Image (cartoon, rainbow, N blue to C red):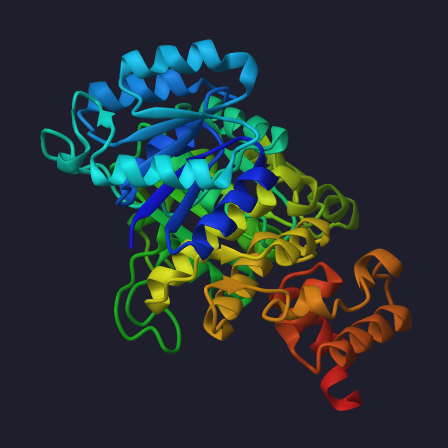
Length: 454
């Protein structure tokens, strides 16, 4: 099966082309900018590129020049409007094997693609029959498959501009955002772009640590310090020494541990439980929360001095529903991941599924989409994921978060019980409907004795 890369900034048009070419038997990838196309070319086996001439970051000519400099010998067909035919002809001199005018004639495009793939068109100074995806020299060891997609919406661009600004500094960063928006990835990205990139990155889920064990997790303990301390243990601060420590859901920390954490950050020293020796540590702190820490300060459950210490720079994570331009990009990205994981070869999503995904509100954000796409990939029997495999989109439940915000007391309890009823007691989906994470939901279930009430 030949693989095609479509470089087109009109997402809907690109998806329509992907679906159509998929039905013709091609493996199709899409990118909406030159930058994304370059990453795709470096990580996937591509046989032919169909590129728009005008793209958001650069244009098809820049992509051609980059291919030449990198030593790729890939056939590239330029797609362009009639007004840019002269520019398209210019691309032929730079190595494009052909061009086609928009609106595209399907039969003409297939003919040109067939010629390019079989060797009837020139490409990058060699015959198309000798086309190879590899560069002239070996690929550098640093090139690896992309494990995340940043997105190309205005909200995503602003977020990652801030990430690039703060990453080289030693400032403590607080990442604020709803569950499932990708906070831990952003923390990883900051670490990767920092001067500590070759040192450890240690992540701690503060919401999953029992309060009585939190100090041990952070600072370690010596053998016999408490019941169950059978051996010495190095805490997260020692493990992350020289690198970055990421505290997810930091708002769940107990008050006493907050005091110890503040001291460790201020003095750059920690004392393992049961030890009389202090250990010097050098870590950069990145924290994340989906709660309002200022509200917790007002209630007296979060220390104000710690808040200011961890909040030298704040990043706000946009929700997926506010990143409309990224929805189909992420859907296809997660599909590619699922295809590799399950050894399947789905081509994409049909048009109805695409429209449904763009219209959906995604209360669980990227985590919900990833899970939904993985499930759909497993269920799909054809080449395309349809609305039938996207159960949440085909039979959307009431948006509880939007229709009835969570409040304290009996109303909140009824709200949670309704979410569980709608999802058949599926706690993960119920949490998504409520707009909270699973840990918070489990805490609420315990608080209101809901398991007994069902």
